[in-house]
Length: 195
Image (tube, rainbow, N blue to C red; front, side, top):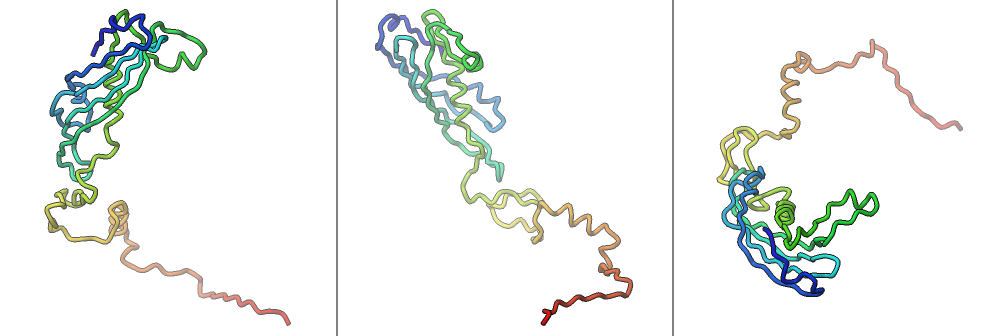
């Protein structure tokens, strides 16, 4: 979204507000997002601070995500906010300034596209769950457990250790108990106090 700032140029402290609906097509490339359900609602305030233009505001968009436990779709609203300065002229000071990305005004316009994109991508949850007590999928057959038991026999083995139990079944030593080889010699040590 490009904002025309000609009305506040040269007027320190002047500001204006913008409310727009923007396409959120870029979110379709994110693996967690199944579908974008509506436009991005942007509410921004741009202020001329003298040395820069301060862009502050909020964004929201309705999306459909996939639960990371049961893989079922769920609808939610992504909400993000921003407060970023657009420099009137780029300045390059020390090495830290070179590494840090700065937004710069382009003539009488501010291009807030990347600002909005980054704010919304950061707002995506790390782990999406449809409910805090979602039981997920059966580790054997993959059926969702929210509808009830799937009929698979329950095992007390931790699923992370299941491959090890298969190794034990294949091992010929698993059939006979392990014997201790002491060659008939048993040594027992007892500790007695010296009087």
